[in-house]
Amino acid sequence: MKAEADKSLRDWLLEQAGKDYKKFSASLIPGCDNMLGVRIPVLRKKAKEIAKGDWRSFVFETGDEFFEETMIAGMVIGYAKADIREKIEVIRKFIPRINNWSVNDCFCSTIKLKPAERDIFWDFLMEYKDSKEEFEVRVVAVMLMDQYLLPEYIEKTVKTLDSLYDGDYYGSMGIAWALATAYAKFRGETMALLKGKNHLSDETYNRAIQKMLESYRVSEEDKVVLRGMKRICENKRRLK
Image (cartoon, rainbow, N blue to C red; front, side, top):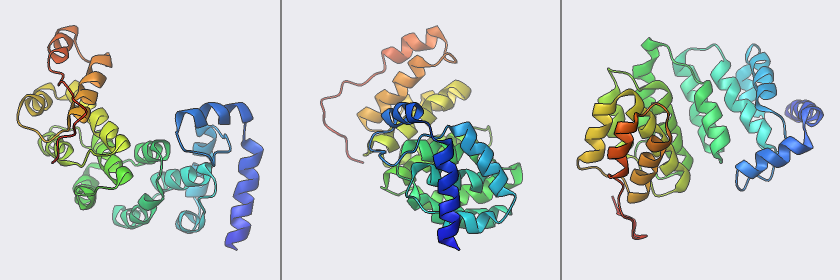
């Protein structure tokens, strides 16, 4: 049954694949050599259809031979209608399958939380706050950015971002992206972290500043200040 389902999905993916798009997309995701080249909107449409059926079996049984299979599985979780506690158990098993920033970020952006679900999901995310796995860290950072840049969560969100392990590139970039977005929405709380005693490596700190400088949501006056806050790096990572 699983083999038939995998073949059916793969046949569909092969029909949708585009050589030029594969070349373009693969160039943006280093190390991703199992991409067929199916556009994200096409994958999202398919994921929404699958989510209306036996989505749990699909997520658990779909393989990871192709990039698009993993991508669809993550999207299906987000689109599925289910109790948040049940969805968390599926997410817990899906996270180890994430091995690139694209699957990571599309998966995170597809998860939509109701206000009553945020505390439950927060507790789940905190299970990973001490992780040193690159994409577990990025899941936490991007989920915090997508779901918890809110007045009632901002202080502990910024504090958690500061505490995450940033020794790997994609984890560091996720933290920097989240902090830059936090700055645009909650300037005071984020600036207090940047100017105060924090645990960010020089690389992550400067990446966050750079993303703020590139943001159209940050004022020119603030950018003048931020440029002067960059750290001088000497290719030495500050240990946490």
